[in-house]
Image (cartoon, rainbow, N blue to C red):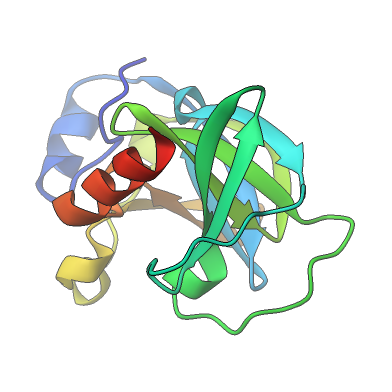
Length: 171
């Protein structure tokens, strides 16, 4: 399995015509919606540790943690998506993911399961949704157990400036 985006807006026909490919996604919950990211992007899933706040950071950056000697920026997915904040509970997790060559932690409401699907089962997001430059990280939609799972490409979630900022925090 490649580590590139699963399905890009214009590549849906190519993904279907290119034969079946098994894709594994880690699904997680955010504000009662289910999202998925490619399993190869996820390094580990951890419980909520103490987070050290950092001054002069974007509002969606919760701070940093020390994970076995490595400093990792922590992003609130709720704040990043403009969703209301809620108190963390026993289901809240940090998904540590490889984002453009560096590790970043993402706070999610809960991690659900690993889903295995065929690439042809992924539908492109509606242009009304994916046409917005801020939402180009949404690469597809999958009908999972009578619910729509939104597939994301975390490499496309941040601008070049934001990625450079995260790299400088982790050094």
